[in-house]
Length: 226
Image 1 (tube, rainbow, N blue to C red):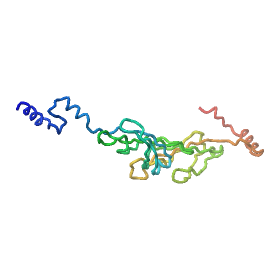
Image 2 (cartoon, helix red, strand yellow; image 1 turned 90 degrees about the vertical axis):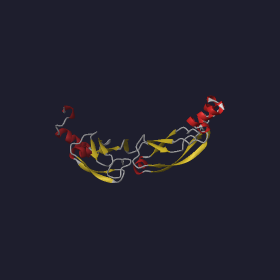
Image 3 (cartoon, rainbow, N blue to C red; image 1 turned 45 degrees about the vertical axis):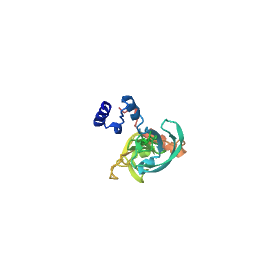
Image 4 (cartoon, rainbow, N blue to C red; image 1 turned 90 degrees about the horizontal axis):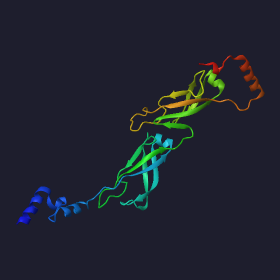
């Protein structure tokens, strides 16, 4: 019949009902397709970690508020997050299928965790590089010295050149953060040691006398330097 031929034509071109079409016309086909499965939305949250966790890697448990497909609160959920060694501030961990649920049987979205490295009492973080302050006495800066400096791994002996200035930085190569995905433990950032010359707040009589003697003996005037 003519009606059957029209139906057969659409079955031949579009696969008929298997593709969301039927003989009821285009309006019914669009309505049927609109009820298809949809992937859930991706979610994003922040996770604050320590510098040591960023360096060594580790695991962290965290609890987040859950939302349904319409964005409404739906209780909480606990996650066990693996932090990769070499993680940097601002990097993202993707937890596949842990985002918002899908609609009509569709897969869940992903959860993106943006990492933030907490402020450390000793080190400043800049990408894979670290900076640490080292306080010096005036005579250590003037005469030079060897001083033990703590790194993320251990303590190393740092040579302070004579005539060092406050604010000057010395570089310890390969003593920063591991680079993510690197197969070599040697592929790391650097540690910069910032020298800070300090003076005693209180002087003994003998110390005061020695400083007075230095004042009378030395011709050094930093304000005359170019």
